[in-house]
Image 1 (cartoon, rainbow, N blue to C red):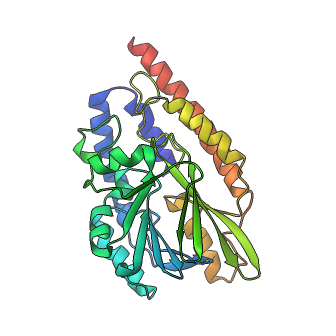
Image 2 (image 1 turned 45 degrees about the vertical axis):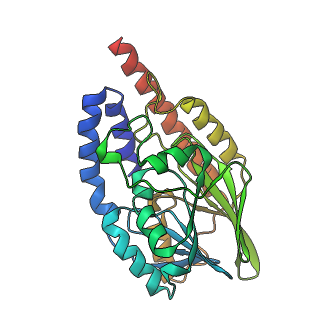
Length: 295
C-alpha cells in the first residue's frame, strides 16, 4: 500500500489533470482492499480492532463506555457495526469518536456513526475545518476525496487529554499528512505489565503537494517536526490508520499460533519513522525536480 501511495505522489506533482486521473486510478486499486471484511479481535489490553483488511478502526473499552477511533469507507459502515456487535458491544455505548486525520478513508462514516451513537467527535484543531467542510486540504473541489461534513464537538492540541472512565488518551500533534494529524497515546494493562501504545496518525506523503502550491502552508516543516517528535517517543506498541503500518495481519496470524505478545515491539516505531522519513526525502526531491522542470 505505501508503495502505491508513494508512486502516486510522483504523478500528483505533475499537475492538476494528472492528479485527477491518478486519484481515480489509485482509488480503483485500493478500494477493494479497503472494503474487504476482516474479523474483529482483541488486540491488547482494552483495545479491539473492528476495521477492514485495509483500514484500521479501533474500539477502546472503558468502565464508562466505548471510544471509537476513526471509521472507514461508507461501504464498510454496516460491517464495522457488525464487528462491534460481534465483540459484545453496542454502537450506542460509544461515547467519544476520535480522529487521527481528516482524510475520507478515515472520516467517511463519521456522520452516520455520530448520529447512531450520539457520541462526541474529537479531532485535531487544524483538521476541524476539513471535517466540517468534508474536503481534502488544497483540493477542496475534488469530489473523489470528499466525505459527508460533520460537526466537531471538541478539538485537541499537543498534550490535551481525553478521559472516559478508567482510560485516558493523550493527543500528540503530528502534522504533515494532514494539518491537524493527531497521534494518540495511552497505557494498557497487559497481564502483569503496562504497555504504552501509540495510535500513530500517519507520516506518508500520499496525495500531498510539498512544493509549488503545497497542500497546506508549512507542510514540509510539519513533516520534519513530526518525524523528530516521533523518533523521540518510547512506545511498546505501534498501531496505525492502515494495518500494513504495523503488520496487523501477520501479527494477528501469530496470535492464532499462540505467539507471545506479537504486537509488543518497542523498536518498531523508530524503524517505521526512519522509513517514512526516507520516503519523504525521496518524494520531496521528486516533486522539487518536477516543479523546476515545469518552470
